[in-house]
Length: 430
Picture 1: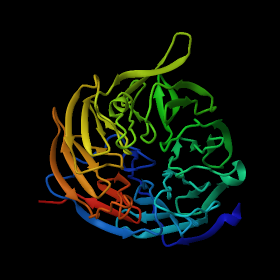
Picture 2: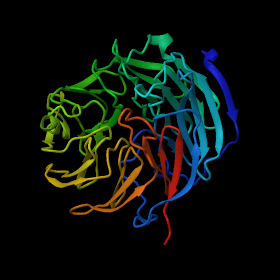
Picture 3: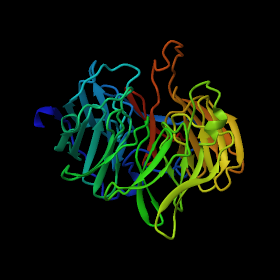
């Protein structure tokens, strides 16, 4: 396995401050359901750019943070030859260290295959990375390689038409990897410290670009997997199936969004222009997990949307409303308890990054570089639209030019990630 190691450049280290708390960290894909920014941000003014850096290679994953360190993955080379994990300083964007590992299954890096799409996970001891070429690796917070696995050698080729985008999920001790390939898909649970495989379970056998998500129902953790026409819950301790739900369609991309009381928000979409918008809306809504007196588990819709559908971005919710953005950029706001529509408004365009919710605002990051800021209330209102970068339209290639893939909060800053750049935003002063 050591032959996969290519090089390591340690430019510097940054000590995690003792004052850092869990609320200041972003430890995995869609880590926070609500962020605290309203006290430190002036939403009536466009944000300022603290710093902007060019990334090595190209990537579609979300950054993760711990204290003042940012970790981000990318691939480099015409055939995604090298897999990079790089640490940067939140203070000024300077590179702290970088590891480069050889991709065990290189493939041409076209616009129609994933490129470093799975997001890593980080905790107080290590960061675990996963690349769609089958490389799984764990590093210390100062960049030393702890362990790595070549899943191609261990479990065979990953035959997937457009690559994988499933991010890692974690709990205190373990990390979960979902490989929904065409032949013999699987889910793995590994010990984060040693890399030991604790269990292997079958995947769904359907098309999916969603990520696994741990949620709690009636005091029991469950690992949710969502793919077209099916949602399955596994026991995180054993990998055994708890329940299966099949009354759904179009759920290829959005990841289940956990709510309280054993419920989760589910998004679904349709093929562009296929005329099935109404059917897709019936698959958007809130699903509730329940347990019978005999001890069996099941899942059923608490309510279904009437018009709201999703795109690549996962729908989100606060204590009162849920928010969906469809393919054309229409924002739907629905009552969380009933599903009753309270808002339908056109935004700046399609949203691929998961929206951010603050205490009183909804932030929509358009894939073409816009930021729509809505003030929440009985009927959310658009405060302003900010152009973060310019993207020229190309009818022959919708993936041409920069695409905004991810937006996260790091302390009182917002980090946005395109394929080749990362930008740190802060609130502007009067």
